[in-house]
Amino acid sequence: MAQKTALVPRLAIIGMGLIGSSIARAAKLKSIAGTVSISDASAVVRARVGELNIADEIYENAADAVKNADLVILCVPVGVMPNVAATIAGSLKTNAILSDVGSVKATIMHEIAPLLRSDIHFIPAHPVAGTEYSGPDAGFAMLFENRWCILTPKDASDGAAVSLLQRFWEGMGSLVETMSAEHHDLVLAITSHVPHLIAYNIVGTAADLETVTQSEVIKFSAGGFRDFTRIASSDPTMWRDVFLNNKDAVLEVLGRFTEDLSALQRMIRWGDGDGLFELFSRTREIRRGIVALGQEKN
Ligand code: NAP
Image 1 (cartoon, helix red, strand yellow):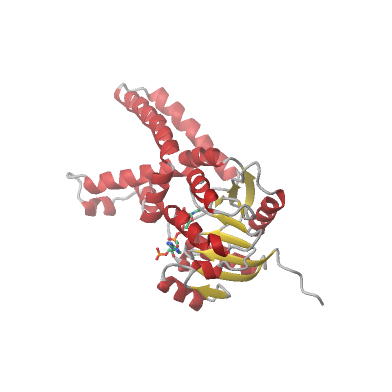
Image 2 (cartoon, protein in one colour):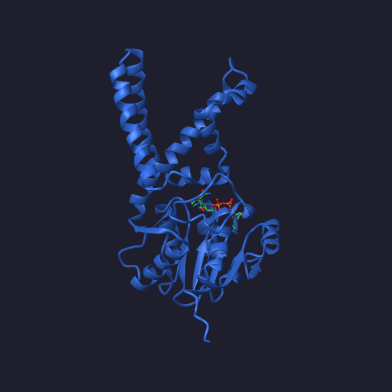
C-alpha cells in the first residue's frame, strides 16, 4: 500500500530546547513530518537530542539543517533569531516556509523579513504554551494540545503557505488564531509579559527584605508567593529578550498597571472594603472564564 505523504515532508528545527524538542516529538508522534532535521548551538543539547532519539538528522550548522526543508521553525531565544535567520537565509530552498515560535512578534517580523529572498514565505508564529523549564529534556509531545498558536502573517503573505502552517499547528494539537504582529505583542504584554515581570519583581523584593529572612520566605511560602516563584524561575535569557523586544507594549501595560495599583493602595489606606470586594469579585470571574475554556493548566 502506498504510504501517505506527511503534511511536511522535511521539517527543520533550529534550537532544541523546551519548544523545539516538543515540536520534534509531536511531529514524529503524529506523523506530521517525514524527516525531522535539527540544529542547536549547544553540543551538549545536540548529543542529548541524539540520545533521546527525537530527530532524524542532527547538524552542528543551522545552514546544513535547513537544506531542502519545506518548513523551517526557529526555536531559539528572540534576541538571536535575526542572527540565525541571516545564517540560514542563503540555504533555504525555493518556496520554503520560514517560521518561528518567539514570544514577541513585531521586532522579529521587522528584523527578519529584509534578510530573505522574495521566494521565501516568512510567517511568524507563537504557540502560547510552555512551562518554566528549559532544554530538550523538558519538552513533551502534548505541550501544544488544546493551546492557542497565534500566526502573524502579513496581508501579502501567500495563502497556501499560511494554510499549511495553520494545518501544521492544528496537527500539533493547537487552536490557531491569526492577528497582526503588533496586536499580538499588546495582547501578550498583558496576558504573559507583565505578569512575568510582576512575578520577577515580587520574588526579588522578598529576597531583598531585610526584616524577613530568606529562610522564612522559603519556609512560609504559602500559595500566593509560591505561585509567583514558579513563574519567576522561568528562563532568564528568554525573558530578558522578551522585555528588550516588546518594550513599547510592556511599558504601556505597565503604566496602566501602576495606576490601578495606586488605586488599590488608596482603597486599603481609606478602608474602602466595598471597592476591594467589588474588584476581587470581578477578577474571580476572569479565573472562572479561563477554567471554563479549559485553559487553566500549564
Ligand atoms: P530553551 O529551552 O532555552 O531552548 C533554546 C535552545 O536554543 C537552547 O538549546 C539554546 O542553546 C539554543 N540556541 C541558542 N542560541 C542559538 C543559536 N544561535 N543557534 C542555535 N541554537 C541556539 O528555550 P525555549 O523555552 O524552548 O524557547 C525558545 C523560543 O520559544 C523563544 O524564542 C521563546 O520566546 C519561545 N517560547 C517559549 C515558551 C516557553 O514557555 N518557554 C513558550 C512559547 C514560546 P543553549 O542552551 O546553548 O543556549
